[in-house]
Image (cartoon, rainbow, N blue to C red; front, side, top):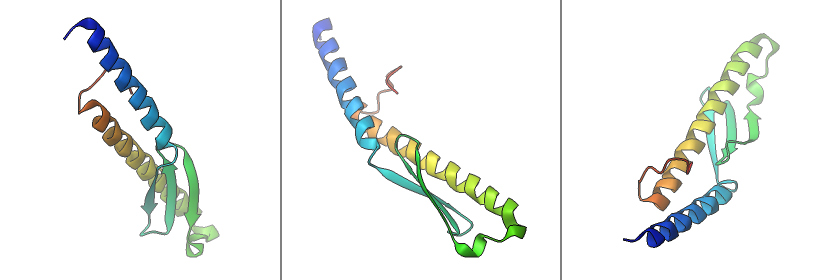
Length: 102
């Protein structure tokens, strides 16, 4: 394979990765905590889109628990978004780790 062909393939892969990143903004994942009492939805750009709290959890005496549940659900949603993005990138690169591509 000559250098021009290699560069062409690298550019094609880079373009595809950019497309995957753009599409990730419309793909969502969710994280839950407390048996579903708190649900956080994130997209592939690691943006939190929504937080849902079961009304039974909103008790002034349980604010610390609610805060812990929000942290747990948010971290789970972000972890799932990262996993989803890694899977999409692996599809483009064929599992090849390309430095600086993501």
